[in-house]
Image (cartoon, rainbow, N blue to C red; front, side, top):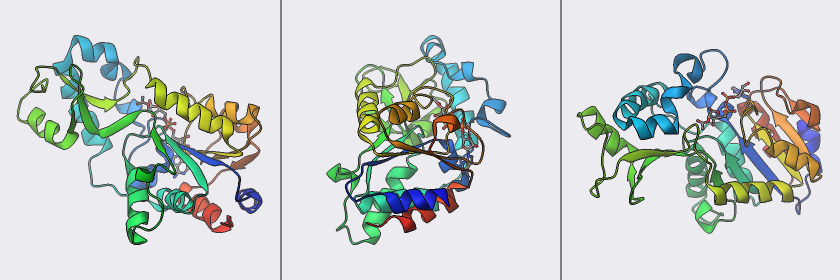
Length: 264
Ligand code: OAD
């Protein structure tokens, strides 16, 4: 099949970059944003706009607790898709994992693969394979005044105990360390993502509807700079027309097959 042929053609010197969206975490139990039962069917995007946070941080945090209860209601773990990418990273084949997800599952998978290996393979700490979380990380919050970071679980408990909005010792309000609607993506992370994309020989767009920025343009940048673009998704996407390989398959089947077919 196409994905296996692509894997077989990957040369050791090729730069392979994976770009992921909510679909890679769906088999772990994290809901997607769009489609049946999507998060944006149950919530209004306006509740989570940056402007709303600034105007009404207390109301924002109350809604945020409900969103967290839906999105991260259980202990979720990396699935075979995350693990396949972590294996490719450990083998030095992946040059970057770029993700729109804020669930931290790519980091966990890379950690678990490294631990299982006795720690002698590459880790993200070596920054051999950067994991770029373009939309931030839901496991952390950040003070809008002094920038201090805290564990989201700790702050969530304080909100549940009635501290709305939760505040840092400096008096500043804590904000989830994620990119809200109407908020700019961190410029340096975005620049790095774009340059890894331009330098890639193989660009895999995995489990994303590819309708919002920067997802809508990264596969096109890869295509315009000569990369072979593969779209792995259960459904058609707007980037299928520029894709060299279209794989309509569950990530937990497609990605292990791709990994097994790549010759390190
Ligand atoms: P979406 O919910 O828009 O798209 C998820 C995609 O994954 C869909 O195209 C599904 O067909 C596909 N999919 C679902 N399960 C799959 C599986 N098991 N195997 C393969 N594909 C599967 O999620 P994103 O594209 O990540 O932004 O959404 C992008 C951004 O929009 C999110 O980061 C979020 C949202 O608003 C912010 O919160 C800033």
